[in-house]
Length: 350
Image (cartoon, rainbow, N blue to C red; front, side, top):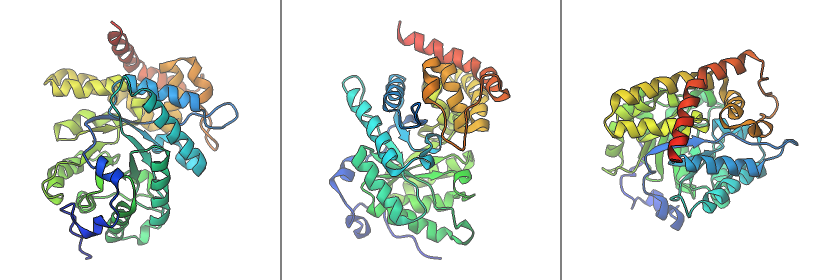
């Protein structure tokens, strides 16, 4: 088996060759909390809706989320051109800068996954130039049948050594042709100092616990690696075993409820955290079942009819009609959390 390079100090020659002032300033661990993989907003002509994108950015910042993710699985990046990807990142970055007077700076994590190391690095560079602070990268899965674990580890290390952005691993087998990185492989990848976190959408909380327990060892004792679940239905379970937060698509709809679970846990109010987690998990099951199309259908239910024109998915997907089975199930399954979210919004205005 190919050995993993020794990246246990920042003086590693393998890393020095790709050092940059930008990365020096961003190497600290991502702050704990809820990160939102934003949905994509399109106007009536199918183009990027900058105004709606920025309105949603401001809404999420007001909910006290820890950071934003663009071009995640909820963000339809695979339906966009490279220019459109840059436009979305820039729109979000501009909105974050505009809100900087009333909010602390927040990370902007851009999905930059591609099948080759070369294109992945190009996407990282383009994301950085548009205003992203971090890159989220899937393992390449197109040729998964002949791709070894050693090759995947090397892929991430090569990308991390050349990316101008700190890198997060995105473990989502459904989006990577079934590639599911085990905890041993994740820890090998995490040895690189420019790899600063992982999103575990696989839902394996045992794997999450093993990564939390092992990551400081492979990073020379440093505690600068963010471990987060990738779904709102196990926020609390992750926190109990040491996760630092979550990157959850359902937070597009109910960000305050997701944030509240973490606050209750930190305050030691476990029974209340469990009850809220139960309700969020029930609602999130609809978002999981219907994917980003379901999340988009729920936007007008949660945030008003004005969201409906800008939340249509791009072909080959179409919106759920109001009288469809999906729309009825989404409303019935999410209405409880909708009420909680509205109460939390009202509480901030008192």
